[in-house]
Amino acid sequence: MRVCDLIERKRPFISLEFFPPKEKDAWPGFFDVVEKLKELKPLFASVTYGAGGGTQDNTLEIATRMKRDHGIEPITHLTSVGASAEKLDAFLRNLRDANIENVLALRGDPPAGVPDFDFNAQEFKHATDVIEFIRERYPEICVGGAAYPEPHPESSTIQSDLDMVDLKVKKGAKFLVTQLFFDNRLYFDYVERLKLMGSDVPVIPGVLPIMSLRSAKFILGLCGAAIPGKFLSALEKAHTEGGDDAVYALGMEYAVKQARELVDGGAPGVHLYTLNRAEACLEIGRKLNF
Image (cartoon, rainbow, N blue to C red; front, side, top):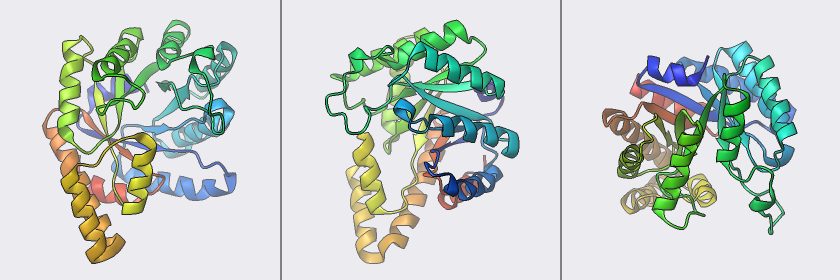
């Protein structure tokens, strides 16, 4: 089913994000996690997509099996990096054949090991180009876009970032999923600004359960998000006094509180970044009990 329609039918909801394991011998364990997380009755699950062909085939196969074998509605990520009209057509036809009706259109990151990579030399330079391509050729597909309550690291100003996301909506994005963040004020301010610009589509907030201090710092370094000072100090104190177990407990408490405040404030649901692990998301989902 189209996620655009599902969002209107059920609120609040939990959705999930997975990344395809590169090695197929890891797939049985991956699908064990998917099966465990069915308990949360996720509205959908997004499956990330490797730029330039890295894990694109895995994305399609995993999304297909997720829907066929596990009954979870998938959204496949689709990036503009390394894309051509021919490649996008082939991927989208395969989605249609697999009865997958949802795509999250992204620009994507530069390929690893290419320091001078030029986005402007690409056939599809921006996520907006991918959104427009899908809307024109595959109108039956529900397309979403990414949003950044903390501006994208490459945006020159907050307004330029909002302008780009507003353009995604004008080009055809029917919903937005945010990058992870930890300060809910950023989300609510962001949604209000988009509405004032005329982009009144569902904005699903991304929530990352912090399971250890080391992994949190690593992930935040990759995406550019920031942990509020008080929360970071509390995590560091917990680590000093109780190690990883204490950090995990504090991380779960914070994620549940953050998700409840988001939904109480009007968010349609919460998008949990699973890191392909079940334990933390199950704990959060059970406590939220949406």
